[in-house]
Length: 195
Image 1: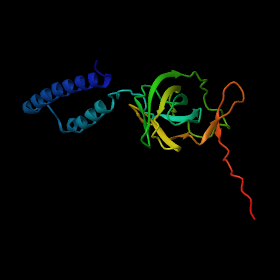
Image 2: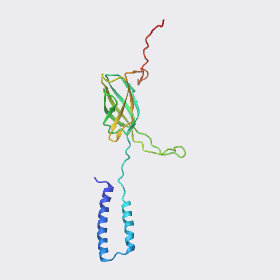
Image 3: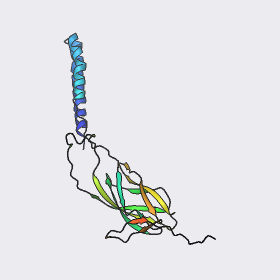
Image 4: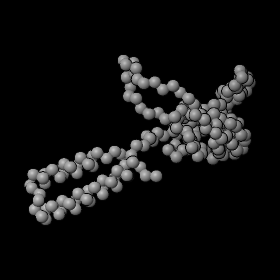
């Protein structure tokens, strides 16, 4: 299917050819006056500017706002929820370290109420932020994955997201509430006496 501007460009090209042929014939026969010669560039510019451009969505790269839970154990598989924008058609996850891999399970649109700017209150520029979405990913941490803080990005056809932090092994799971979270583990201190 052709874009509207492509159709207009074809019609404009045809029109310019027809007008050019008639112009040349009129010049040869001596029917064109000097004042009309000045009018032709203005007419061509008006036609060129009058062609509407093909409307496209802005290309908004993906962004991640939140990851839950925040960590996992080495040698295990865990499912994570990512909250962010423009995550549709995510093709994969890129890690900064070997031993970690992931696959995208599902992406869900999150409805949000979009309001216009409020006079006197919303003073920043209104910019497109992309569609709000959540993604579920399954991360597999191999037994050879190093413990510590790791970073990853979500890859989509529109680009890669900001870096997201994932903790491994240095965290323990909290038992509080319905949704347990990963919290920093307390270091084990050996008891030693000074003499």
